[in-house]
Length: 325
Image (tube, rainbow, N blue to C red):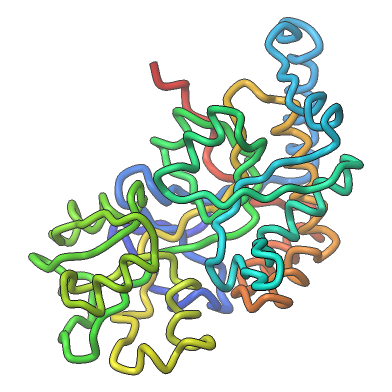
């Protein structure tokens, strides 16, 4: 089992989400553990073993989510909402489309049902999934040890994303180390909070979402707005870039690049296996790269993962943790 490069610095020194090299999955504590390359045969054995467990000792614990989806004729997916480049709001309908919605639509099509998307936030997404308000979470929710103790997930990532710090050009902040003693605004529940505080000595302030964090940055109540790199890059270079001429990304080094996975409820082995098979098919067929390029989502990691898939190798998030008591 081949592991990608590791470092204890808490950041990725390979540059932005677009490095031609394999992404270095760096760590601060448990967040951002390495992706493992798994041969197709090993993945197949693992999948068969999992289904065998369902078919024998685990029958009573097999989830009924797929049956419920088919009975209601609808797959309900939690997405990030209007958060370019991953989600785009259609002013005419008020509905959210884009990269994440397209992925959900493909799963729904394979199940022979329609798709309903439900916008989620950092403070509602876990609650919505656990309460059954959504069947899956296809959002920018990276793997962390803590999340894996309360939720389950398809192990094959559909992206690899790290954090960036948006700052005033006059701030003098050029490195993560420059945030020591400074206020860093993050979304509530962000996996960036721990390394910012523990590794770099920042004063972390949790806000509801990225727009609120950016307003706080512009208003001067935080020194840096720290969120996933693609979203902040879109802010600085997208349609609203003119509003942010006085701001920049402090560094191209990404904070704890981590696997982005599709989340399910605990003890839903059949849903988990189905979704994982779909993700591997997306990689094999190139669908993920096509969808990313359609919406301006950085695709270099996806191109690398697709090339490995063609060679029968798939990245994997770390193994599922024991359930939190």
